[in-house]
Length: 496
Image (cartoon, rainbow, N blue to C red; front, side, top):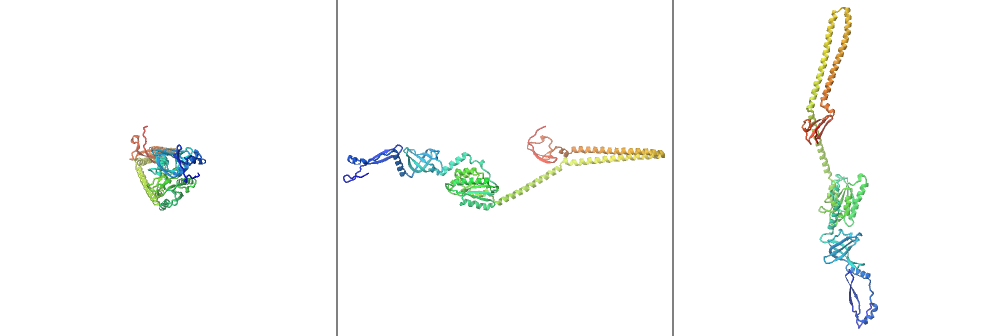
């Protein structure tokens, strides 16, 4: 605009015009309207060009973003929506008015919790407009809850989600090996946690190998690196040799603030721990620090040093336990031997075995007496026959004597044969009777009965059980068989 002097002075009478576009604040447009017709005619060629709505909205956006480039707004989240694109759309209200707000995906990934309706928050961002509609809104860069930290809200949200999915269930937790040979440690190589673990293992169990899987344990990318390290160790163990396998994994770091420990609260770390085939001990911070990793791990150690003490028992303690087990084993063996000797002595003193040798000796003595009597009877009968033969021989003539002698000799031979046959028959009969008696004795012998599949059942007091009613369910019994003895327990009784 050119300035023209009038009456020695520059006079520019300004008229202020206020315009409002729907959905936007009032816009002040200053225009120069000359009130005097003569002067107005001089400036007719300088009349302003009319703006389009798009141009006006663009100028408004630029003005708003320049004026409100960094503002803090406090209010209640209303109508929160997470779009499929990852952007967040919601409104902030204070009871009297509200303002629309947007938090785009490239900004909200830094926010560690998910907003929800009714949450009181404090937002930082800039005022901008949606030019197509002429609506102004707050473009949010950061978001913090009021009254409770963002980390606490995010912690409770992640905990509730994993709890619903059952990742904290005790039946999913795997037992730790008693004597691990190789221990993996997922932590920072420069942190105090690794130093503490190495110091404890060097003091308590130098035979344990340590495998360090270095990773960041603090910062925005720490959670992803920890999860990747756990998955890397599992892939290694799936393809390595048996002696190279890692038996247990320690995941943790030293103490710090809630912000420093946040990587161990991330969902991706919890899911990597739960999916691991290697048992995992979580050792994060100090004893008072509780993280999501502690809840989902197979075992939580209050500190990294405590985790090292858990996985590697003192070698001196192990040797002491082995010695104690050896002594207990020897005592148990001695007790068993004493019990076996007592059972053998009780068996030797049982009446059924003490009577049998005596009865067997009696039968043998009877058989010997019968055999001796048979021999004496045969000899006496032969002697009597010889006496008669001599008397007859003396009364006969020589010729007849010779004939008679020959006849008598023949008869004598026949008698001798008959006597021998009778003796053999008597002896055989006696032997048969003896064998039959011995067979009957053997049939009556408890040992003989046992060889045919029978058994002797006794109570622990030594009483012989002949009827089921002598026993009760649950009572201990001793059963003697031909080849040994067994102990049994009555589970059921039934009558024949």
